[in-house]
Image (cartoon, rainbow over all chains, first blue to last red; front, top):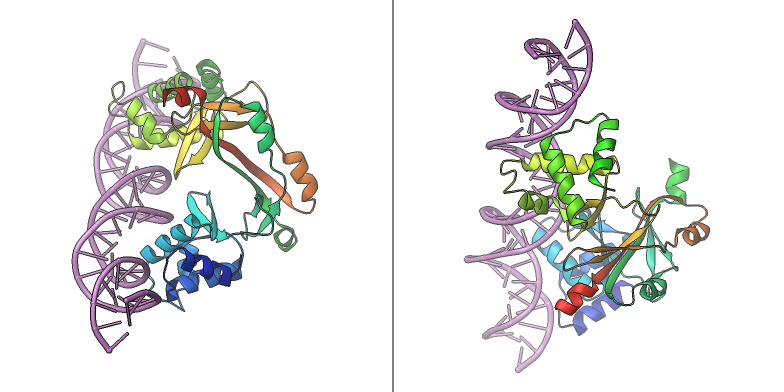
Length: 139
Length: 139
DNA sequence: TGAGTAAATCGTAGTCATTCCGAATTGGAA
DNA sequence: TTCCAATTCGGAATGACTACGATTTACTCA
């Protein structure tokens, strides 16, 4: 997803277009990797020195709810990235050094559904952690 | 894993056998599901009213490091359960109502390794969330 | 079996991510 | 342009978790 589509969805859900929201979305479009609320604040410190943490947290949560962002929890922190839209359902490899992600096509959920016929399945999480090629050669 | 094997491992790693550790391990053996540090404290409030939270956190972490417990992060909290030892590598279905878990045999990591030959893969997480048959019929 | 010692625990204060809240500001409809 | 609900700000509150000095205790070895 890119900035323009994100703004479109924002408006269509009845939210207002504000400088804070634009800055957060532009940052996430540019970075294209998982960032924490703290990362966002730091990155926008020059451009928007008085954006409050409340604003950052509230907007990241809103964006996540309206599927503009993808969200995960890593090392005790919520992290967000611009939602991918190349494929439908997918998972991620996440580089633990730079935060770069790589989309994975494999998902074993059909098999799990067959294994657990009497269970209600609401959600699942599949993530792979390690070091991306760039960080490997750099380190 | 059961209490006796856990104590054995504790001793073999050079840790002391204390009433706190016994109580925590017996609780986790009995419950057989993911509990948070807070859950553990509450459950032991009668039996050990003055066990400090430091003791609970420190021991849960130690047990996790020495593979007596399995650990996950759920809803912003670290949760722990007695380590399964029926199979080697496995994943879990987790009931979001009662915390009950069900072991899953499927793991797609061989396929992922083939998809990402130039990435270093250190770890992965695969969890399925929902409602177990007991909670479904009860609800 | 009874010190001696390092490990473990206690109690409490500190940290960090996140949420809450009232007051002030602002985007966008009319 | 005016107006109002949505948004933001600033700061305080929350809750999970960690740190730390003082005290207690499990285990070793004489």
